[in-house]
Image (cartoon, rainbow, N blue to C red; front, side, top):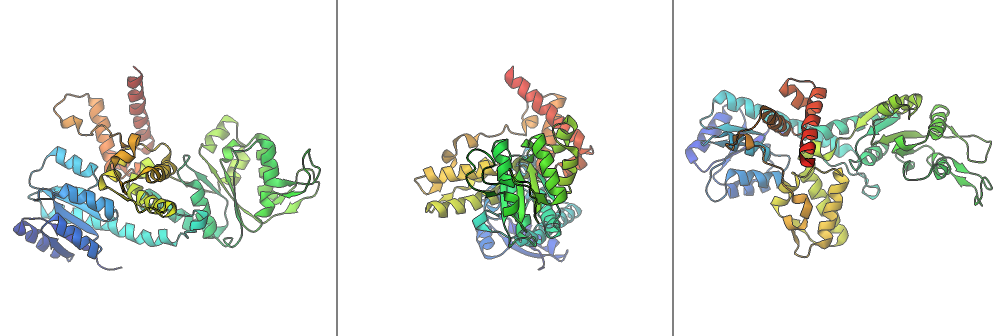
Length: 456
């Protein structure tokens, strides 16, 4: 891997030169720019690992430069600096995507530590880019794993590890988070990739139809069975069966699935014969199977058979750093499909990052497709997204002069830490020096209180 390259942006020549010299003494490769437009031009010519920019500059300030970088080069980290330090500026810069914030005059040790941490994160991201790209993208089947957040990198690692093994996998995650894409990526990178991948949503069909879809039937097995039909397990022989929303199956169906997993044999409806099948099973659920087992609505033995390897797909709100990449991907995909050349104003991604995304990646894709279909100008703006442009309340109310409760200070600071940790709840809990379960309980308490106040 090549040595990291840093770009220093400051319209004060002396300050820029001093910072460049300080970084060169640390053996970094450093270049300079005296304005945001010059920096943007350099970014189109070279790949920089880190940008250090002053905030107050003529024409285009450092905050706007950072927004442009976040929109066009989302993997490039930005550290902002200013001689006019304030809490509001620090929080705003971090909230809008800066990796970190330094005030002038800076301590050399602080600069050295901040730059080293930023470059370490940049290195990890770039190293894992190769891992992500090794997850085969089969566009015709929709296998497109998009995202470079720490949460998604962990998912890529799990896919890479489990794909060649043939082990049964249970994928957990909210609706619309991309569970089927993970299943397809596992199949595509396995020894079974040349054979069928067959998916079935267990919650979308009735139990009677589900049984015939899975196991098939013989002619005359029931009224209307005028021909014999092969079930999905037989059709997927030597390939992979993906059972989506496995939590929606009935107890009797769970018993039959357990038998298939244990014996690798299927019996068509209306037949006494058993047929051997060579299949890999991947299941997915948007509910906690462990909780359903405790409630008695899901078989414990089936749960353990399915949960050999567990992969949890994070919701979009917990990996919001991936939104620029996802937005750009869907913008290009649906522009090509619809046959229109459509671009997006940089403010769009920034504003969309404030949306809660209850429908996750699926909601984002549908929103982009709808906006492109209805747009007539060729340039997507905030007006094309309507309800998705509702802004969050500013997190810096603590410092606006209003008196707030201690609980409100706690809520704002926890939100700030989670933002700084890019939604990584484990890291946020570590910074706050509490365990992750405590953090989730606190967030739930804040959420419940906000909901009750809304009702009141």
